[in-house]
Image 1 (cartoon, one colour):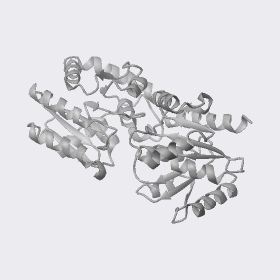
Image 2 (image 1 turned 120 degrees about the vertical axis):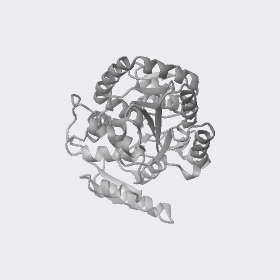
Image 3 (image 1 turned 180 degrees about the horizontal axis):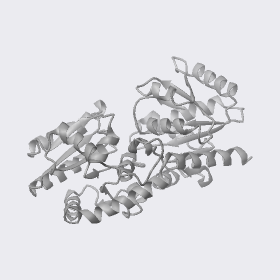
Image 4 (image 1 turned 45 degrees about the vertical axis):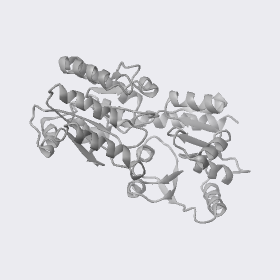
Length: 377
């Protein structure tokens, strides 16, 4: 059960799940409330997609949901938002249908009504799924939840879309001279210029301003670099984007930093970077980070708990102190002095994340959660 089908981390994950459901024998249908730019992709995924619009009367919507769930003999209603979990819980009263919700974020930015819904439904679902153990611990401790009903299912990534292959290959040469020149040509960069970047929309989950402060320090070191921010400006949080743009303009970074906005060619961009820089405030997983690791480029990320978990405490990425651009600069200068060491580490990281965070692994673990819930009675 989804809200809209616009482009986002949750929607991208679910689209990859739907596309791989057939070969992993996952029997599912998709219910969504609003259309979006990914609707045609979802409809072409191979699974049935049904749009059910709430309208003015919530109970009318809930009754339509109930009818659909019963008609399709649904054993598990898996909501991707607390509001959908609430709808499903009401719709399935006096049925045997189990309710699962995946919590993709934290409750930091929820409004009052959103928090009320979350507090109510999180104790009434049959299972809550979290995308990292760090996130699970936060919710379990804050809401005093039954640990037996809290499960971790790491996000999964379809790595074939990064490689441009139909099947995953970890032995493939990920970058090529031809690919390497594409973004440089677009930006009119010299082939010796260090090309670095980050991926992620400008919202309160991420901390792009720390990255901007680091870029000023890097520029002060007279390093020949160009940095690209891939990610859109969110209107309701527009100051986060505008502050970064103004900081770069006011600190002599014009011509050294490009804000590319939302792009459809993120895999190709990642393959062309010499390094990837990520700053987070409170990510629950970090799909963009894992994709960069999978491509096999050196990755730098701050020591937020989830990032420690994903990178095995820095074994597979370079960590720097959160909101400390001086520490990031120090770590990055070491990379410039020992590129081969960092590239070897990046190759090991690629093998690691492709095994641990693949979409196939995600679906396998998801099916295990489903099976245990269905058969525990």
